[in-house]
Image 1 (cartoon, helix red, strand yellow):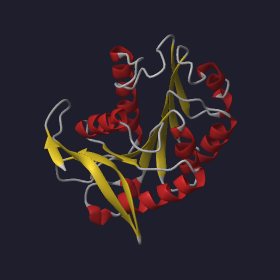
Image 2 (cartoon, helix red, strand yellow; image 1 turned 90 degrees about the horizontal axis):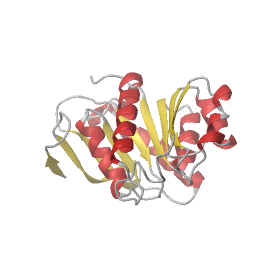
Image 3 (cartoon, rainbow, N blue to C red; image 1 turned 135 degrees about the vertical axis):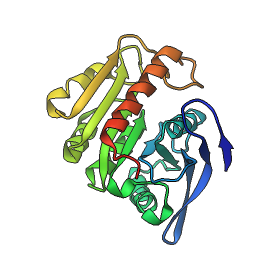
Image 4 (cartoon, helix red, strand yellow; image 1 turned 90 degrees about the vertical axis):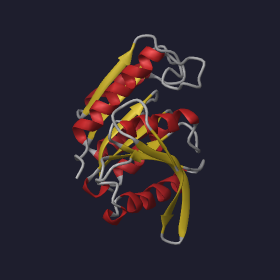
Amino acid sequence: MAVQTGEGTMEIIYGSTSIPAGPDVFGGYLARPDAIGQWPTVIVFGPDSVPTSAVKNICRVFARHSIAALAPDLTADHEVNQAIAMKLVGFISDPTGRWSNAQLGYGTLAFGRGIYDAAAHAATGGGVAAVAGVATTFDEIVTEDLRSANVATLYIGSRGDEESDADATLTRRTDLPLTTFVVYPDAPAGWWDDDADGYDDTYAADTLDRVLSFFGEHLPERV
């Protein structure tokens, strides 16, 4: 992996990585602070099975703000993804790895359809301390999983995003009392994705600020 100095306060280590899980090895993208300590950690479930360049960039931003971020390679099979996610927990929760404090609790961040994997994983009780969903829809399936997870949750959506349904999500407020809902009036589809036609620097920056603050509040501090 390469080392980069840039925005934020931390020098970071980042790049594609191999994730050992017993006899299996999974691919993914990892960004973490390049400093001694066990850091708060987030598993990122992107809108596609393989981390996109936008998801990788967000992982690097997290690392520069003192949060390790791992975006695994997943599949189109929801059940397979759940098995992969549980194996990833063993990887990030192993204190001998000396970079993550996930054994004390970790976060999940989802974009688009990634919320189905993120919410289902949180419902397993595997140690998820907080969930954030961006540019997605909390439908009946996701809502039931998040109710089972019963952890602090952040939703960020937009009425201008035709690829998700913010108003339908808002109808779930009474079912999800631990959730904070943020809805932009007109951010277009892809406002958070710097490769998308609808990317909006102002909305993207606000989204990242909110998500970073949320995880900063709800994840265990560096040890």
